[in-house]
Length: 377
Ligand SMILES: [Zn+2]
Image (cartoon, rainbow, N blue to C red; front, side):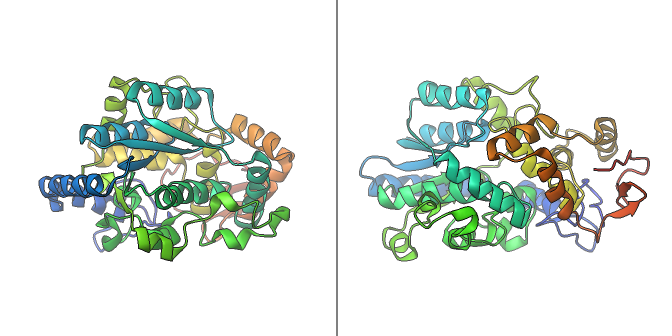
């Protein structure tokens, strides 16, 4: 397990590759953003995207997939500033928080958009999450499948010519050079990067008794329909330089409520606040990749120049190992399983190529912090 020389991410994290200088693909993505991408040209290219959408529009110019979080507010605000008529589309998480609900309502009222709050039968969500967790150790496969499929399908079915997603994850969090410079999120992208552990909807038919029709909401539009209407599906972060802190500030100025005092995971009070279950998705990376959500947050802060690598390591050391106990309890109550079930499965996905057992304690040889307090978890 090797760590980036600039930030604190290890090469176990998906998408993170270290180059000959020991610098990771996430930090190289930041270099792309700061030095190699001509943002003036990209902004002009966005004007062209807007003009093409308006020329093809028969009502709504664009769909913006929104969770109600800071980034979705920023996406809607930016689209409206460019004169686009926005339809907001949300996959409604069964674990929506109170603050998440308030932010969705405020976004609709204060930004003045039409909005679809798409709710999947909670019993289907429940069974799908059980199957995804037991088979892949990934509670968020249903979430990722739904949040890519629903807006993409609605764009084709409702004949909306443009879909405006947020950041390009490969540019922000690490990926190879071609993926970092991609501007479009099409069906091929979803198949490759949709965070579904290389599974498609069809792979889950039969799991926990789920039928083809139970899983209707997760269906992508058929490729021939997508190609026939050909909605343009773009990352806003490929046209305007993405900055999570700026997005939080801009959204806050328009009425977005941050989660100060309600930190669920990581070190950012303005992120991961919409859903009670998202902390589990991040927590399981401890077993699989040996990282916590704070590693992601602090690495971005290092790249932005907001903290040094040494300070970030100190913040991690002080924070220590935190278990999202409340969210694990809520998740187990939702799926109707005991917490022992959650821990047994988490343990079965521990990557023993990076973890070593030392008595009752698990340790990672060569971990970023020498005097880390290891636990039985
Ligand atoms: Zn790095």
